[in-house]
Length: 282
Image (cartoon, rainbow, N blue to C red; front, top):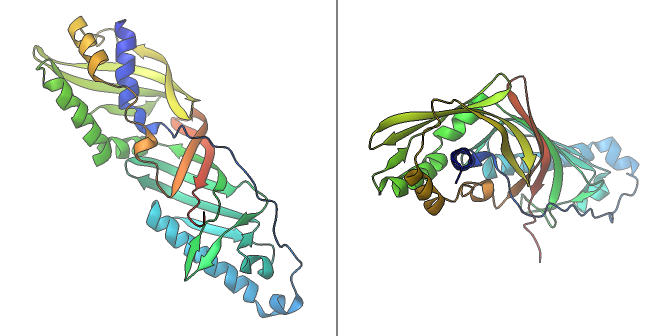
């Protein structure tokens, strides 16, 4: 196997933390609902507003519990009658910093896609009779990359693969350094071998493809592209380079689908679909 392709496989494995679910992200909107005009009594008493804020608070609390602390929620309703039936016009959610099982994202903003959505408010808890789809935007910064690399989930996967490789005594993968600079991802991967240590250094662009953020236009430092045929054979036999994807960190509560990703001003800007999963009914 070509050595550049081989090292590219190592790269994809090590950067799989920014990959996304392969599930179907089909969006189905329920257009049926009760959107009758609000009566004058509810408008005057302000009960409409208080009920809306109660639901917002419950949703916010659950997002903070299920995903990451720091969520803000803004609910837009048709009227009180609709809200009593669990129907609402839109839901906006945001978080300055999301950190979930090794996945780190900054400046996350999302808004529901469908013109009408439905929840069930029962026993001071909110349930979702259908998936609720949002369009989202977010960024991945150098701090986010560091958060992921230092996470126990990423380190566990790295140690697992390193242990498999090191059982042969040939070489061992060490924790990589990844930094956004000059609008490219800059990698430094330490490799410890029987004969000594060296570092694989390279730069890469990114693109969104197959619900993942993939590397493209990879440029290696010529002095660090050192790997022999025995290591090449070992890697092709022992490592699935895409084994560390967000499939292992996507939540039972939610899913994320990548649509676009690009590097601007040394920040990865990304957008796509965020779904809160159905958790009520058949």
